[in-house]
Length: 170
Image 1 (spheres, rainbow, N blue to C red):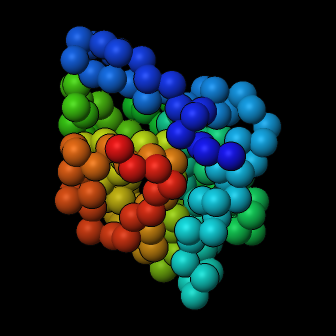
Image 2: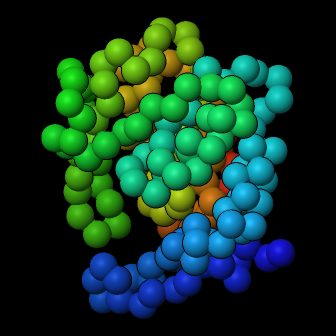
């Protein structure tokens, strides 16, 4: 099974010149979804117990939850501004096509907990870097950032000071 065949290219979305990598065909196929979660779990460090998996809104929630189950860790959602109901800390960041703000509950991560961050794609790195900052502000230790795919030509890995792993590279 080649996971690349489940990634659909959508030209000029969300704006002209961007080729969006759509993972919904991968999510719709139970075998591809299972393989993706299993392969991402294999990329996690074996020598460090992961306490929490942080999934980034919104596609990072799907496989992030599956990874948390496989790693016997808790799952923490990081959401866009105004979507979490409890006390939050926030971080603004730049996208390849704008700016946004992410939030995490202030009690989501305890100091010293080992955290795996998961999202579907590493593009410019702004989103993942913002989430690393949020986790570190709460005292967590980011062990690794996992992605289904990395858009290497955008050099987003250069913004991250932690190990990264991805199944696909473009």
